[in-house]
Image (tube, rainbow, N blue to C red):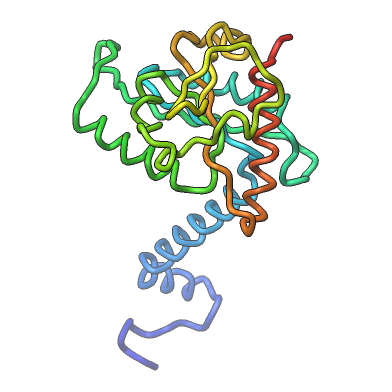
Length: 229
């Protein structure tokens, strides 16, 4: 018999298993690790939540995990079932431009802020998130001074009622509505001072999947405005 790994015993005998483990232990472990990793990835993909919509916050506040989860639960109660799987789920994604130091104090970091601005710009250019809650300072930054460059839709395109809340305008066009005193934020322990609600620009007519999501996002945005009434 071949002498490369010594004399090979008859297959599946006790000596053969000892032989196999001695010469192929590393190979076996590597293959098993790969199989477990692939299986784990597939399982996670199959079982991860299928969110219908996402609300994004961008500003200086930092929300802990419990607050994030509370927002998801409350928002899911008023979220349309966009993917029609019999379950309404809304995700909450925060882009905090502040960081906490080791002592827990909130601070600003120039390099981190630049990275977050890049992340926010990529988000606005994507097709997954339509509803944004912004601090006023960030609203002013991203809204720009010209409607031609503004990433947010005019309020007249999505507000269902003429809500008597403060507005933010670009070239005389209202593009954001104040959440000052908003009950949705209050219930989730969020300071509503200087926070505004905006909708990202309207998808193209050929973006059918995005259009369905956008229409549902419009309903959710209006539900947030009237929450608790």
